[in-house]
Image (cartoon, rainbow, N blue to C red; front, side, top):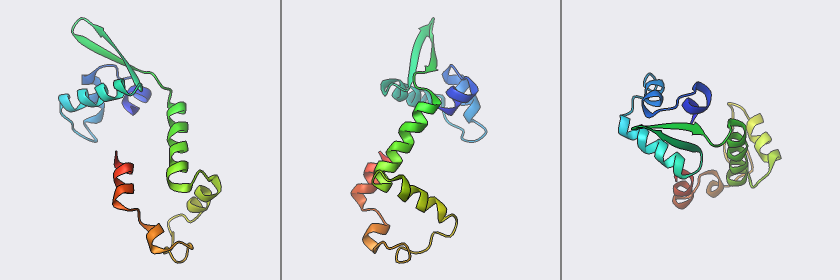
Length: 118
């Protein structure tokens, strides 16, 4: 999405070229990702000749707001105060006992991790 939003990539090849220095991916992998983003409504696809051209269907600001809302709901029970407290811990987050959490709260269960990764 960053390649489409920030760098104006419109084709699979352009996205692949932008990503290559950081993460070399096969053309078909980039195509699959863009297809999935199209299905989810994040990008729009228009065909000209044999080439598909992609454009953002969702603004960067709207996507960021949705991601932060999801982060708040999933990890901080919708509480901005809990998120701010977590951020204030900085690079010295302390142990679960120092933050008032018990061990079961400190690490997510397998099912929670699977939900997070999907």
